[in-house]
Length: 130
Image (cartoon, one colour):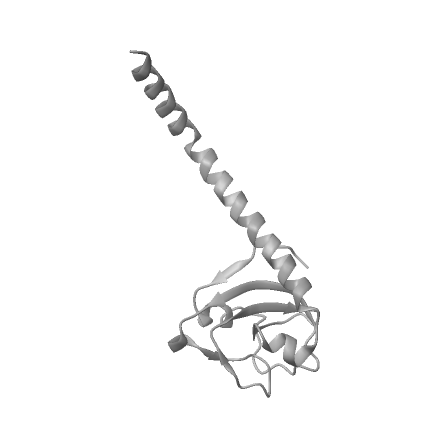
């Protein structure tokens, strides 16, 4: 499976429009491979869990890729409750990937500002010398 940066989904429509997304997934056959992204919605934006039979509404959760080749969304507690999977390991890997992405974006931004910051330092140093 292709490795991509973690996604912070801003709306449910963002992941529901993905071609591999499925709703109403049987938790007995759910076999998550990795977390694709996460979401944090307001209570007004809450949506029903992607697992069949759950019907809980939640506003914090994850979009996961499964070994069967599809994607679905799961509330933070639903995966533990319904699937009995090693959720901690998936979350730990997702957090690491998110931190790596954020660090890389910060470094890219600093590199883009490098010449501007260098010129500012030179200007300040010259002003102090004067």
